[in-house]
Length: 136
Ligand SMILES: [Zn+2]
Ligand SMILES: [Zn+2]
Image (cartoon, rainbow, N blue to C red; front, side, top):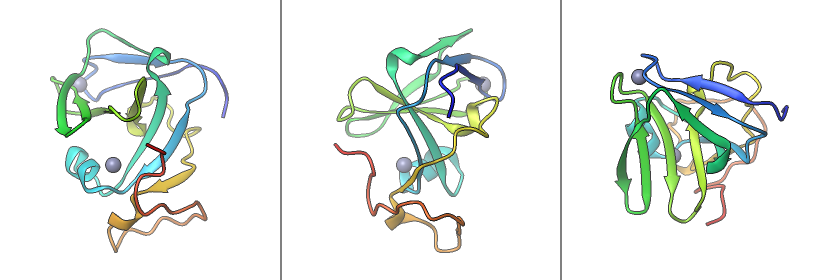
């Protein structure tokens, strides 16, 4: 994982972002809320300190998805953008599919393996956490 900046944006190009430096965290999330928020069977979230991420050309729309959790989406195309948790202050997690080049952002672990879909098989030997893999 290089420490270079990574850039990305949503499907419609309504906003772009630049994430500087190495991410703090890269994990699959199998939780039901991520599934509902994205429509996808599993998410990969890439965590940064908030100061590492700068949005340009617009900003995603925030909403409270559960107590203490704020997610955002693009108001133009509906792309799921970010996850922030009050118990992880100063951190922002971006969905990996937003990045122009997600290839280097290899996940390191599985969160919420307890909610993984039975038919979803990911062939790796990464650690499985029944709940969040991020200490709260
Ligand atoms: Zn958009
Ligand atoms: Zn999740």
